[in-house]
Length: 463
Ligand code: URP
Ligand code: ZN
Ligand code: ZN
Image 1 (cartoon, helix red, strand yellow):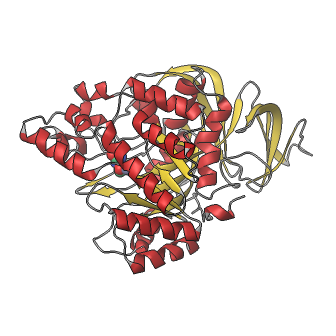
Image 2 (cartoon, protein in one colour):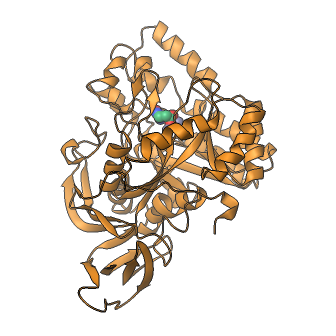
Image 3 (cartoon, protein in one colour):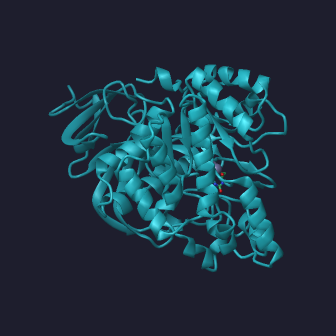
């Protein structure tokens, strides 16, 4: 059966045009004008007149079913991918949690296939998680590539942080393999010192979470990683959840000095929310690392997107219930599990807060939320673009609808949205994966287990 999406405004990273597209056996076979099915029986026809047709979103930073200390993120790969689908995201690349101390990379890969393979409703991949560095781990990076995982994440803070010698070794190895190393950048010693000091002085409210992780603690780590990547011969380096202007400055300076292969991600929350939220009664909802910043930082990030300094907007979706897990931090912010939901809100917030306010173009939205993340992490050209040969993953967006974002509209298992009450311009009307309608008018129509594991390619092999 063929599927025709007709009369819509088809948007790519480079332009938009009115036209039709045809999907055959889950793959886009034609894009053009006046495409018609040979007979009524032969095809399903969807009229997208007056609407935008965008590639399905690619969110390359989620944490489904993440086990963090004693708390587990409340979205498993079913609930979390249903939420993603309803928000117009049709592919995720999930950052796997830390495993037992000393475990090989494949320990978590096997674990995650077990968590996702029969549950995900959209297509998914995994990033490796490097929690110690030795000869075996460095060799295993190559096997991870052969298993469709050409990226690995290194944390510069938390329990399994990696020191500079380990960082350098991983960067060199990943460069040699054509893979990408992703970094959570915060200066661990600074954060530990400030947390200890604040708590010992009785400053335990959520706002002190932000005070314990200042902009410069992030920017210092970003600069350090960029220097190490340069030392490793301009090894590909991807900064996850960059949140502040000083970090962006570090990136710009490195690029101005000629350093190549630097990729930058920010997340929706750092564009839209500010640290005043920690002063609210429900400030625990926003405890995440890095923390929310200031309006000035948000503006610098939007500008960074518009000017091409930021390549990807992801979510770091990592939901814990406000009524339960988040309450662990009610007397002490350091006890609150870090993370917030967002996978469902990303695409529409970028449209409403970015495109409709004139901060970014619709083409830029497609670039940062679909095409570039797909390219960087080896999903392209199957994902993140609408062109012949790509998977029939798309969303239809009605720019004329206005609504208020509330938790009742959402599909995640979590008990809140960080964007409660926000006025939204634009609405995702339909989402398709490989030619199948999986969401219509905010109703999920897909099926558990229909998501495929995305066997990703190394950077050098990407077209
Ligand atoms: O607070 C956060 N971001 N939690 C998820 C893990 C991480 O640091 O990405
Ligand atoms: Zn992180
Ligand atoms: Zn994360």
